[in-house]
Length: 256
Image (cartoon, rainbow, N blue to C red):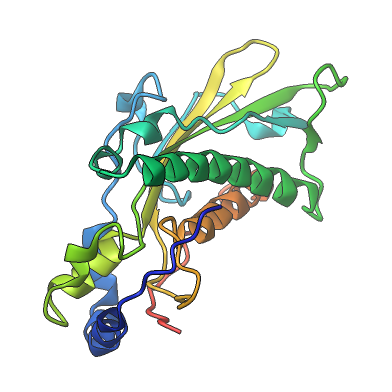
């Protein structure tokens, strides 16, 4: 992936000066920053979704009477990035070369997300699902996990320099957090009936660090969010009836 080596020294001083302010109000910052993402269109009936207290995702719908216990095999489809191309900040890119690089990065992030999901299920000590990667491989009852990345906010200061320019403790801190979000929509499909048995969507935010002062990238903490979702998919698949899978809290600031 492409990297950008521009890091003004003022960024470091502003970040350090605002550490205490962000840390002291971390829960409030997170609750304000991580509202559910607008419905992107990957899920056909988003109005059926609601928040489930026992699941970590902001929006969930489960077909009445369906259960993951009926399936023993899992297919992870390539991650859809179509909706990512509609992000507002992407349309404001003035450099054709940088825009091309970002589009390549988005494609690689989609491959990374799918790879992490497959890796986590394969390494699951409970072996909850047989992961099917070869077309035509014989399987029993199988479900397909279909995912779409719909948002990744840029964290590289060179893309949104103005949001880092405010006085320490004001716009700087708010911009720092708001730029570290990612969102996805997903669905589970019964491979035999082709019917959707569940849909879910989430927008999450990474910690405001750690920062690599030499190899900053626009997608910054996005991989950490993707890793978390991949882990949660396995946790949900393995949970006992009535067991809750929660999001990790609290939000913490770790600048170095």
